[in-house]
Length: 111
Image (cartoon, rainbow, N blue to C red):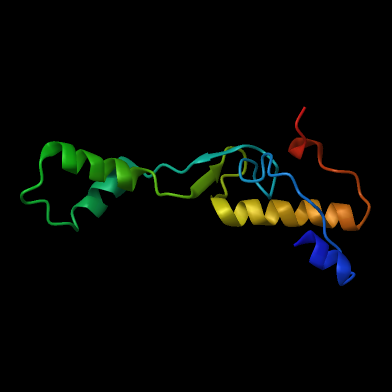
């Protein structure tokens, strides 16, 4: 793909994936898995017909609803991110730094 972009004279940059989905795009602090409150989980569980389910099965449902897949929350600014969107925005920022000739952001560089 890089070769095709180069042939057409389009700018491109190879971006390392290090920390792209682990740091907040807004403030560059770490993000962690988003956990729902126990009350919210119980309210959500009530919308399902639990008749005939064993305790391990209902326990698995609670775990599934407690941590939605792909959602992250920033430890610093409390922004809730879709993991993929956050990573995409971080890669865009790194690309713009490259295109504009700015120095790389140190938080995205492996030490």
